[in-house]
Image (cartoon, rainbow, N blue to C red; front, side, top):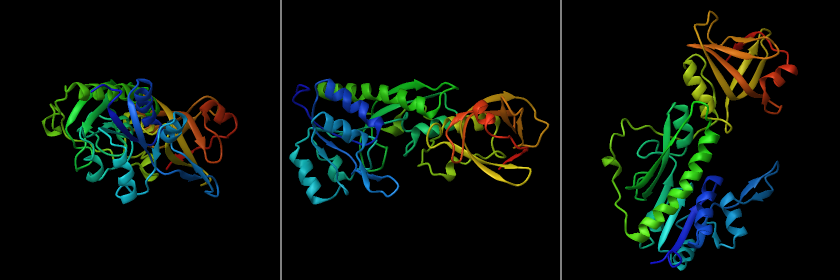
Length: 323
């Protein structure tokens, strides 16, 4: 079968999923339908509907779009069958019921932003950076009942630099993942696919999870983490949703801060952990286990994100503690 004859249904929602779809469309593959989430209410009064990034791309390129509320709805399943897909591809969408993933004769494969079986779950990129990994990657695998557990088709490894935040790693994996999706389709067409069960993957070590991240997940634990762990924690949540903390001055007033970037200064602080130090002009650092964490980009509640030097020009730095 030629790629022009292979009927593909593509499923995805966020910006991460657009790159793979773009490569399929521009590569001349036959994408017969796109499945994405329903438009999301936005705005102060939730009275404006915003289409997903995948829908915006699909509509701009004349691709049929389906947006089911529930994936087991009889009407949706009828529409999906009518597309007569040979293959389904899932990138950053949602968990599929068997009636959906088992529908096409060539199966359904997923692109996951980790080196499975490591970092199964909703936030693999964040947790890889938070945990200080020096390498991550992307994996294509065939779907089965348990989420992120299907047999692996292919993997590509991607290094993580100590200066990379989750936004940088996201973009790296998006690009590499787009190419991997195309390569996987080509291998399926050529009959050159030999999936490996995840439990047989070599040297995976203890499994690490990647659960969904909530606001409280992002709160910085100054007392419980080392200098490197704190630096990695901030990187793993920047630029979104962002690590945050509370700063209390000598008068007892509490300020809420989001931290977007940090630098490490190794040492043995004399000050208690969590103590804020600043010259009021050029630096703002916190005494922690193993040295000082310099806060280089931050945002105080109600203000814009800025470099620390700019922040200090408009804010009188109080003596106090991080909470």
